[in-house]
Image (cartoon, rainbow, N blue to C red):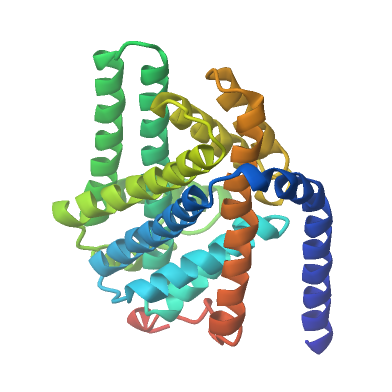
Length: 335
């Protein structure tokens, strides 16, 4: 066990060292250009990034509270920082980030089902919010507002969110489908038709503890969207710091494009790929490359290494000694 621990630490140090080396050219370029940057706008960008992280903490907390798991806002936000550090810094970071969040959610008292539901629901709400922002950006860049297209996008997002709320508050609707699927699986495996149905009933009973009211759902959807709005604000302030004045539509399109390519785990934090995408997208909106490049550098330094450093500090000081096995049986199941 000690050997495994030291191996993990050594691997982490090596990965961070490689990332520092890869970031060095960007950092040197940023240092050369920072003399012309407005530090007031840089400060505003940092504050906007902090607001974005806090908003996701609010989203996570609101969903857990609806499931009867009390969580303090500060604790939820600190988990967001630590999980973001893992997602940004480690190869396969999203997997580590999700596992860490699941572990901490279980530590707060959530069952495995509720912890998984919270992760899935927050992901869906965040994706819906980002998609809506991308559609709005596309409409604005198009020069005229397509109310039909915008209305369809909004209606689709609302339908998806309310559909998930209905399933969460009425899990019994899944029973029939689950029974058919389970019987098919049992037939393939040569097991009795009703094998595993007791576990299905236990899972649905745990989902029934989720009381996601319309008020809770609305608040969760707002925090999911506001998380993106504040992050776009960080990019906008970074542009203003460099002397660029992008349009709202251009910002939304560039930001959404950056998030899409960041979802492909090529390098930690989308290093290089996200930077190039943001730069190309902002230049395509009519901004000069001479102001776009420092703007992107400022934004990326805040949203990547600064957030990662803050997250690792939080992890080391707050969560490193957490000793909790997420595979412990749920007391409610009496296992």
